[in-house]
Length: 170
Image 1 (spheres, rainbow, N blue to C red):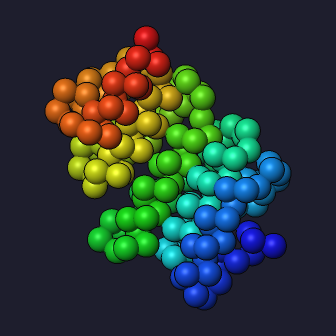
Image 2: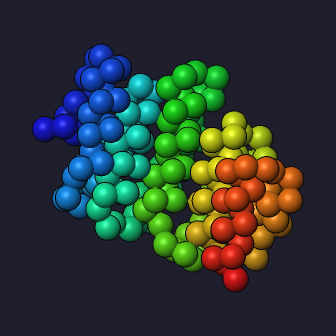
């Protein structure tokens, strides 16, 4: 099974398996992939996060609160200076956004919200774009200011994502 290849010793095999999860039609696969996306090994975590994002794009599935919080904790512990750490950070936030609905992340506590706002302010452009997507699903007044700042200060994908998030939020 493709999911089991996410922890293959060969990085190219892991990432190929992750990309292949975009053809899944089974929501159970999403639940299976979450454990790889939070693995202690950063290479497995990166492949799991990519695979989770691809699977969530293919299968209707809303992440549960515990899954979101676990994914954000894995995001926080990924090293942004390492290649797989950067890939994991971007893909973990993308997975949270992909597995959420408008207002569906209103439960995020202060710590996780601050973590995503910090990623918006200090992360690499790809991470910042995914942070905007996540904040757009929080639907609380306390995230409007960072989204408005991103809309005004960023050109390209980050600013466009912030504009879309603010429109969706009303």
